[in-house]
Length: 330
Ligand SMILES: [Zn+2]
Ligand SMILES: [Zn+2]
Image 1 (tube, protein in one colour):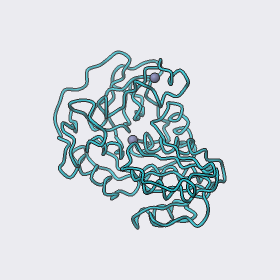
Image 2: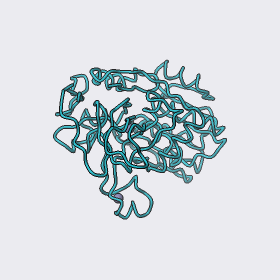
Image 3: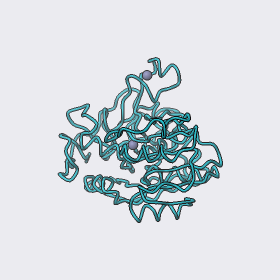
Image 4: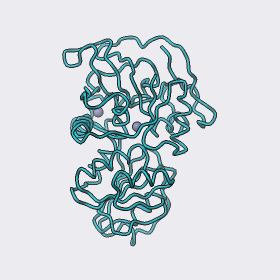
């Protein structure tokens, strides 16, 4: 099969992914073999490729938003030829104290697709049969891919922030994840306030029904009940915190932040405001979100790249040059 492989993390401008021919993955018990039909590009892939997330393996195929067709290892629930999605959470031990408490997103021994096990920037991929999600026909290959991490984890962020229908919610940053979260918020009749850099992201936010749109340094004109930050920047987290009402919550949807600057506790956090991180996802988040996405006919805006253009796709995500989501079609 053809695959994009990382051997040494480097800035993406140096084209760290090599496009190579290699053997197909060997079948393994409890796993399905997938022919990859599409794979979304996530900011986390960038952190893997550039090394902000330290390497777990000597070489790695990134990609954790895989739409695949089952071509091996089929089961009764997942028959040959069925279409499934694979996300960031590639597996858990099922036995640690977090798994036993129903918090599998915090598992002590997880595997992560495209980070600790090979991912979907390839023609084929292997996935644990109990960690794939059958995809409704309403979600086609291209539009389902960005739902599988950007969508699911964006949805989890709304849960972590405790969003209630009709509330005022701020989205700080407007990339792949936020442009899906806004559709869910609109379905819940929330008012959405978007602070983001870039004229085209601002325009997209307006077209998707934001009540107010400002630049990344502008403060929304009202106090927010909840805010979700998407940029890997601590300054953005503080801006979000400064926009909250008393008792409000900021959920940080980022696996990596540059730093958290020193901030004024009395003015910003006191008043029972909360700052929470969003870590990974559970299979229940995935199932609930995919059902909702099909129900509200959620169609991400996508830009397609070939597998040969995997480095370019990552660079475009890094530079915020993609409206909506980038998707690789091998
Ligand atoms: Zn566990
Ligand atoms: Zn992701």
